Length: 102
Length: 383
Image (cartoon, rainbow over all chains, first blue to last red; front, side, top):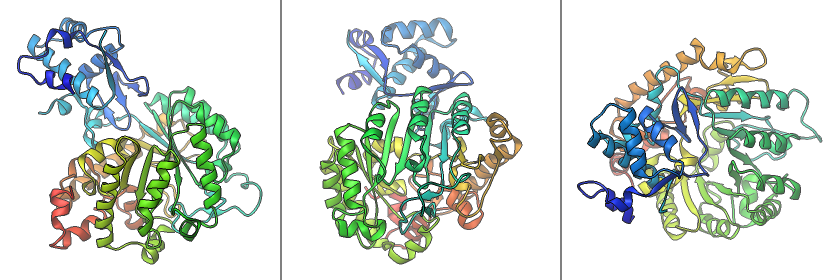
């Protein structure tokens, strides 16, 4: 909850939160269909979200994921930052992603 | 546009629009047989009572066919397997197939009457990581109340639930509410908690199979339904953090918190489902393959699942369904409903079985909307 409120702070996340390592909840079973991720019961992620989801393996920080997406997608840096952060916290809210502190 | 919408993460029917005309097959339903060892009053499958030791040949699914369906469906994106019957534990290879599905990465939902589960099956079930929901119906907190609709099975079912608790198998306890047990809901919820249920769910009688007549005979009134939704919500709050509590019915009868917690078990999206029965028939879900009318879109004994799923007939079904749904969405009660973004109206298979239609509003929504004093429940939500 503290983390979620930090995410909503204008100006984005503090450095501490950017160093969190998102990890896909191992209890969530998912598939890739036509390059897009499907999470039951009926969630389909678009290409960018699918890419972020795949990067949430517990080894990369939120900052690493933002950098990776910046290199591979054409959009303004601020838009990418917002998309990645919003996605990760949305998935955390749904318990699809867990946030590790180390 | 909300971030959820932008990313395609929508807890609703819209998220699969990402895939256009060729959506993934996310959920495969399998009707193992129509035979059952019980004859419950309201059985939506109108199951056939098994009077001998084994189900007759040809009336129960064939294991190689089942395994092949699991493999083929996985390649089309399937991640949820829903097993239904009749009684699935009459199928001698059930545990073998469940293990196979687990290895293929499926989440499995299994509805059983709980009378045929023994120590050995409990041990196997406990080892399945993907067995998310094993649903057992308990219609009363005493043998007297339970037996009214489900025969003298109370003690056997309780024994099974205790066994499953010992093996830590995740269990959903379901109550089909009717005139005879509506007073007992709080007691059944307390008993469910004691029996270690992950979720206690209250369902209304489904209007399919024997349910249609049962709804007339023992169904509850509109006022009782509204009151029931409030009582279930009170139970949801009482057991929060220990056991989930929910209601199967239009989403506006539940609070947003309840809907969020129940999303895994309650969401139905016929556009990304397929049903297979023991004859190899494929339909949009198992309830399109009987009891009643049959809408067969192919047969796995003669065709590949991929060819059926991408066939013009299946695409036509999806197009017709969307078209008809969009037309009902334009008129009340659906046009005025607070939950129109997350609901497709009545169970589409029920619309097909009852009226030969692809989509229509549930009777309950129509009744509530037509009564001026209750219309707000549809337009604003009960909570």
